[in-house]
Length: 492
Ligand SMILES: [Zn+2]
Ligand SMILES: [Zn+2]
Image (cartoon, rainbow, N blue to C red; front, side, top):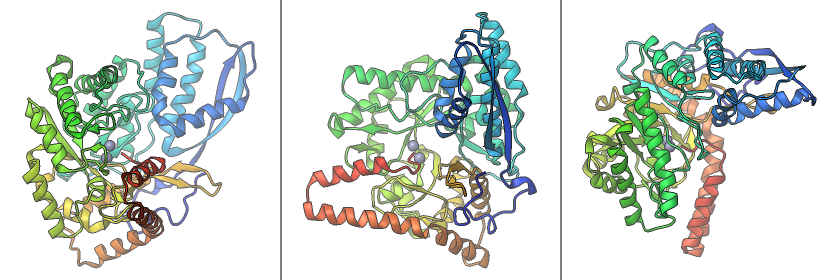
């Protein structure tokens, strides 16, 4: 399934990919053993589908279930599950995990369960990469890959797309509760990095939980946010990861000044906890203003100013976010001005990582809507400026561009080939002449691809601005911000 719509990707114009690039549909037979009550075959299918749609939940669903033995079940059921090959590594694993789970279900012996995990993990067949990692480059470009089923699974996922850098969630980013990092998964993550010559310290930038707001003044809420934040830093430390990116927070429940103080206070406290090792906390630049903290370089600078150990704080610059927040990157002059501002207000020495996204929304629209590279309002030239800035070669650059495509059957699926192509496009921009036919053709093609989305969002922004101008109240602004949250586009 999941044949691509002709207008969603740009396979032909971009870097050539191996012959096995096309998504292949595979049939996976899932057997579950059940006793007593009958379970419908669709329920297995549904469960698999849910995993596919909400990868963040996988860790809890699968790994959590793995160490919680269930009553013995004997009725054998079959279900046919069709999945795209791009997800096979994970999906096959999920379904086989379920099977094994029930097989060992009547055994309480944890060591036996751990052996099963080991056996299962070893038998996972990683899909053939659809693009090879570029070796002769100083650039470290990658994407935010799935860690469904455990952090170690991020490694095959980044290899699959030919990435030299990556982000991942270390635990469910939408839930407060999380189970401890499995020592087994941690070891496999470390081994995987070693095997592929990936330095977790330099190339990996995990993304923090969306729930954590370190600017919350309420003591209980503050503790909850702090505990989750520290827990993530500790996970990084255990995995050999040096950089950790998170959203600074919002001052919905307090003043901006107090919020900034609280964020710095939490960072200082976490730095003093030995479980956080030497991990560097990166403040992500944000797209919105209002109560969001981090929408201006000044906000970020104020937080850093209050952090005691300055060697353990930094910034992750999201190109989409800063553009939406009013910092232009499109022309060489605008790019230079923005970087100069960053340097003057924050200091380029704090810039440790990038999120590389185009923007579906125009400059200063304060909307967080990621677009595929070259298809948004930033356009290919903005990325040409960045990729040719040697000061940043070697820093991890992570794509968070949308990869959902709608198949002929109307169903949405992920096409990770989009990231594989974008990585190559970005790498190829180094040294490319913007006046060359190669550049101009690619630029025009990508812009054409994004026309409909740019127009759609521009219309929304215009209507919102007109409405706000009419009202001239804060209320209008607040409404517009809450509308942003309803967007289904990737907002990170
Ligand atoms: Zn983010
Ligand atoms: Zn981001």
